[in-house]
Length: 232
Image 1: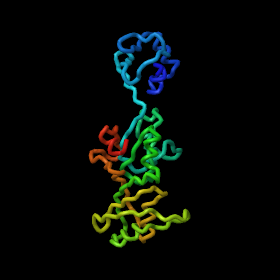
Image 2 (image 1 turned 90 degrees about the vertical axis):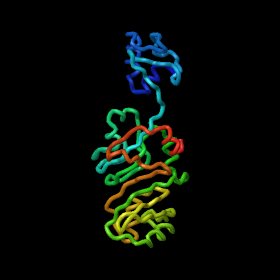
Image 3 (image 1 turned 45 degrees about the vertical axis):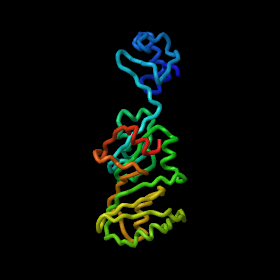
Image 4 (image 1 turned 180 degrees about the vertical axis):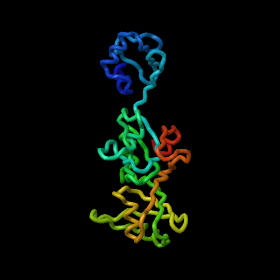
């Protein structure tokens, strides 16, 4: 890879700015002052420094966030703040949320710039389970579970939801696990059985659970072990 491509990919500077930095002699590769911004480097093994700061090349970035209310899970929104806005300066890396959560829904959301990874998590064909903690307005009827396992017809799409599983926590709270992500699906499923969702939080994707130490609105990079759990 060219030196200027590596540094521009990492959003360090534009290629024009990198060329000027090379002329000033402030960029080194393996301890040697870079002669040209176009010189070839091994981005995974060569040590690139600007002044004395090592620049670590990473093609893809992976974050876990505990989404807060009143932010949308879009990259841009003219009316509301987004989860990407909550990422601060990291937004320059063209990252995006994997899937969608409603503006009033909290909980687990993955943010990355790896399109293939994202596709594997949200593609209906992959059938990756998503688990939600649900608080309801009315008392829970255990018979909901039988109805959800059979599937609910949603209109106007005229579709039957895939089998879902409900686990009762107490009279008003439960977990619901689904393997798809239709528009407002969890809320609409409970509306169909005559109840109303008043709080919704996604707590798990596949085998990966929302880290308990993440407060609403907080995020951090995923560890290698967590990425393996998510199938990377």
